[in-house]
Image 1 (cartoon, one colour):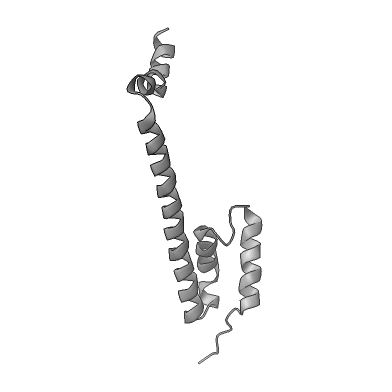
Image 2 (tube, helix red, strand yellow):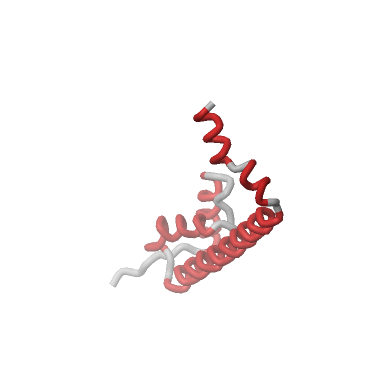
Length: 102
């Protein structure tokens, strides 16, 4: 049986830097960064490393969902504060209709 050469911590760090160089949003706070790492390097990672990457992905997804839910709640709260007449008057749909029929 042939011995498998797995990536060490430094090689993983270098790969994450390479992924980050692709786009500014691909950093250690973005689950996609680790999804790319896993898809490109899974065969070079040992079981513990794969588990670490998968756990990191899940953790970042939960964090992102929590942040998104807070933003949605803040937007909903802001919308509910507007008077109904203002919501209707400033609706994008009404503006589209004005342009269509004028």
